[in-house]
Image (cartoon, rainbow, N blue to C red; front, top):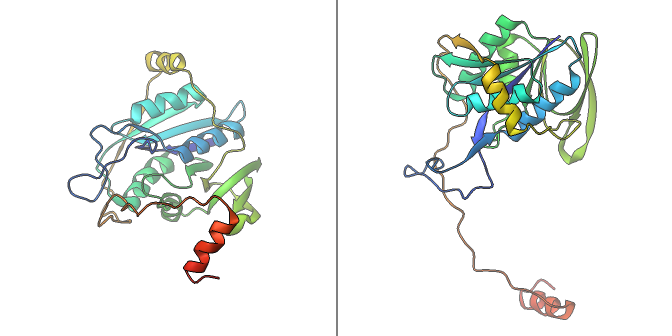
Length: 246
């Protein structure tokens, strides 16, 4: 079985974030980046699902961070790593078209993506890609088990309601959380992979006009007037009385 996992390089949200001069995005000049946390969970789920004879293929668009992501995936246990190069992509549909080209060439049985990326919260890459490839798609998945060419998945709905689905493979799954915490790859193991492993490259063709969500404005939240600390219930009752609440 071939299991493919899509990886994305995103801003580290623990950093101090600043808006760029255009007011439409983040100033990335001094910003640190890392692997999208949901993609890390997708990779972990793939590694948990894979048997001794199965392949786990990590894929990422070429560009800054792609080599680090892919060598880290190999250090964690991925079998192969492919970097996509060539035509530029725009929007979610452009990315879906690009990834579908290599995935169709690889004839993968299962394709895992993170449920969304932390930089855009779009969550549409998996559904767009599945539509383009003519495959079923289930997102917001927190548990996966395989039996032959069928996957049983647990999907979460609003309010924490869970539902179990069975889907025929090949299929696309958007992983919200792996069954186990994503494993850690030591720096020494990553460096070893950089010295002993080779990243495969796949040149994508024209992806056409892309579409997706567009940011029209970006700004820091405005500060309020502050908070009033209340020491006891009497003070709370007096405050609410003054506001006309009680």
